[in-house]
Amino acid sequence: MSVGGPSITETLERLAPGTPMRRALERVIQQGRGGLVVLGSSSKVAAASSGGFKLVSATFTPARLAELSKMDGGIVLDDAWSNILEANVHFVPDGSIDTDETGARHRTAERMAVETGKPVVAVSEGRRVATLFYLDQKIELAQPTEVAAHVNQELQSLDRLRARLDEAEARLNRLEVGGLATYRSAVTVLQRAELVERLGTQVSARALTLGEAAQLVNLQLDDLIAGVERTMRLVLQDYIKPLRSGAVDRAMETLAAVPAAELDDTYRVGKDLGFPVLDDPAEARGHRVLAQVARLPDSVREDIVRYFGSVSKLLRASEDQLTAVEGVGDTRAAQLRTYLDRLISIAQEWEGYD
Image 1 (tube, one colour):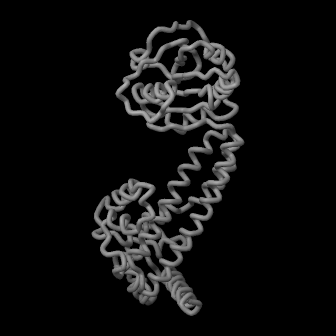
Image 2: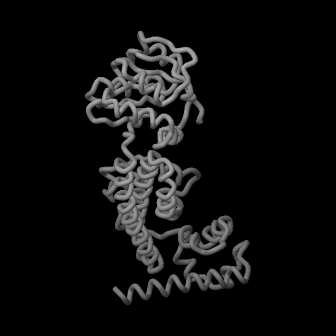
Image 3: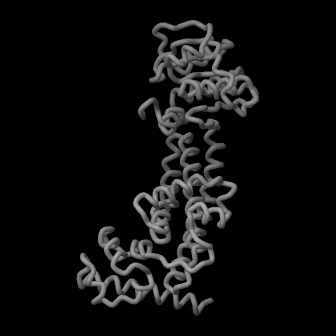
């Protein structure tokens, strides 16, 4: 558990299919009566509760919770979800708390979650589905088959987005080597990387409700998002001006704050990141290009970037010039020169193909 309560991840894991609490909620759904359960107790929960009755030594079991949910009021458990503390409770949270929910049960659940900071689950009588409200999030606990279908669709979309990201990064490589990079080409990589990150987060959250079946999803997800955040940071290191302490972290936060509907607006993203005119020539410092060199320590990469200052100067560097950098001996200089020559060759091949 995190300070102040369980994280959303921990909570969803405890509500995954096959867990005792999920079996309890499925029983409530099968009864067709609906329900409202506050998963934790505190003075704030008590202040927002009225009526009902307290239970003594009422150990939580799926059957017991389902039976108690047949009464009109809600249920309160302890923080460990091991004991049922109260039943048939009328919850009266602050009515001024904003909510988009239309049903009374779900409005109450969202307001209780906001006011108390505890996870709250509402079971819809009509739709026959349980919904978790917690930490400003609303997550439907759909049936595993339904969740799996959504996850598979999202993984396919993520696979296509990752392919587009790899394509944009390969193009940026060619443009940098050819001295034709612009801020637009850099922003395109950042946009696509941020899209991959966001969809990956969405898939991860949804997969948590799959229980044990989430393991295979997470393996695929890890493969699809591997290295994406690092790519974003390296592109920002290459193009942010000026590159001051904390600038990359601030730029990452700025990018994460761009509304989803505006993330495909290259001009908006470039402006938010403080880039000049998008079609202006842009000279990369060389962080990302050097990050692709096997077994090159970050400290040595930093020294090389400081020494040469740009990709164009780095590409023209001889082995003797490379060995002048601290940490780059004869063997590493030869390795770097071979790598840089290969980059130039690939760029030339693409030019011939175009």
